[in-house]
Image 1: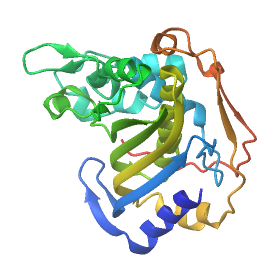
Image 2 (image 1 turned 180 degrees about the vertical axis):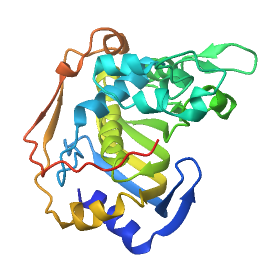
Image 3 (image 1 turned 90 degrees about the horizontal axis):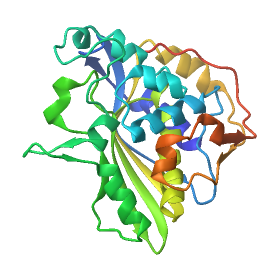
Length: 283
């Protein structure tokens, strides 16, 4: 929470106003922020100065790992986060590559689980990483990336947290996640949970111990219509003790994660939080 609140204050104190073409709004912006999450010691980074809906964040990451291409699939597993971008983004609605209602195109997990190669072949990046890490191998190239500029025109949204680089040291798994752009009031509470979850679940299904996540944000911003709520409401609240996050120990393989896992296989205990804050969302 201290890292999160310090970044919010930094944006308000040091940020520069930038016009955002996609949303038509101004953003108060800083460049470069570094956060870390201690998965080994169970320091779950769930925001407490407002109610944070951690289940939707976990569901979205599971959808990425499964390679979901439809907002309907994301809804079925427990999150509506792709509804607006799939169905209310006018540029995407006019895109000839859009396949119909709820289609998100080649975005996020679709890219990683079915990477397009120059010769027309495809690569499952996640399966390769899981196979290596399960055998105790780290070739210093265990990178799960959602970022393929060659298919940006085939997706409703470019990836924000786009790269996850795993490193295995002495049986302990570490994660470096890179995010090009971050809506701090709305998105970061999701992204922190997702990065923590990703390391925790990858360590479990590859038989390694989890270490730390190092989360790099390039462009961190607060939209102009979010600023008052952040400055005058959320930052006035005192943070509460961190909760703990639990994963069903029966999840042992990538196939398990792909097939039978639901949100009932994850639990948060001791979550104390302030009232929700309804920040405006920009499509």
